[in-house]
Amino acid sequence: MKFSENSNQAADFLRQAVPKMIKHNIVPNPLNYTLWYSYFSKAFPNLNKELDHTIERFGTCPPATGEALFLEHISQLSRNGSAEVEKFGQALVHLVSDLSETIDESAKQSEGFADALKQNITELDSHSDAVTLSPLLDKLSQNATAICDTHQQLQQQMTSAQAEIQSLKQQLESSKQQASTDPLTGLYNRRVFEDIYQRFESDASNENMTLIMMDIDKFKVFNDTHGHLMGDQILKFVGHLLKDMCKEPSVPVRLGGEEFAVLCPSASINAAQAMAEKLRAKLESVPFTNKRTGQKIAPVTASFGVAEAKGKEVLAQVIERADQALYAAKDAGRNQVKLAC
Image 1 (spheres, one colour):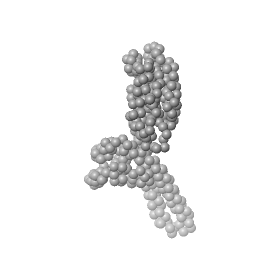
Image 2: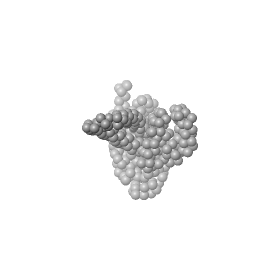
Image 3: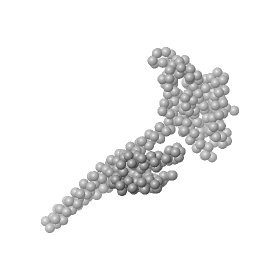
Image 4: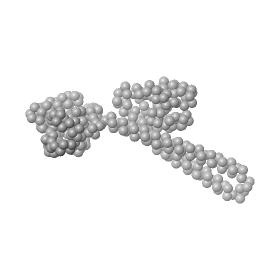
């Protein structure tokens, strides 16, 4: 299954979904937006049949039924791989942005029309033969009032829908961020690390990619001595250090535990080595204190392995060579930078 990547078509699906939800008094929440967007995109034929049956039976789509249909038909995306889920999220973000602008513009045009109609009636009422036209003017006035009332109701509904769309967009962005970042350090996680390297592999114009592997020395001993809360503070500091010192296009990531990496596109192995050496020296120079006990902490150090991708090496091969260099740095006494062969 694949949702439309055409933003105009995608926005049109949601434009159809909003009136449908209003007509059948369906709560405008992110789940129902997704459900009815899917309905008009016809991405899930069986879902459409069940929604039609539900509307025919209840005149609406009860929350419990909507949730059950969502889980049965749409949440299967999660089983089709993260790439498909990401495409789905990106499509929704794109279309709700377009639709928000469309709703706003439509509301302005409708309001202008209502104001113009009122003005026309005022002008007609000023004519000398107004007595003859009085019954007609009364009817026009009633119609204009009805149009204005309808407009106000629609405006309120559209404003509510627009707020929900914005909420959906924010939730999608938040989910995307949570899926790509490490919650402790704020760095990108292994998933992003792998995605970036795969894009590098597929782009023939890329010249080279260098990888820095970094591992905090004796971190288990540090945790045992100072506690895991202090250990987490060290990991956070390393995250900030990498963000500050590894500027674009370099991409620092946390791979897990006390292990970090920096992807260095278009950087030679010598340039990456220099970056790793700066990181090593900076970390070693920072004084740490246990705020709970006031105890001074011995310098925290890290070991580094640097490897440059050769030809069309897959990521696992580059990691293996960088890891071997890192282990060599550990064996040589830690707090060092070593280059892979």
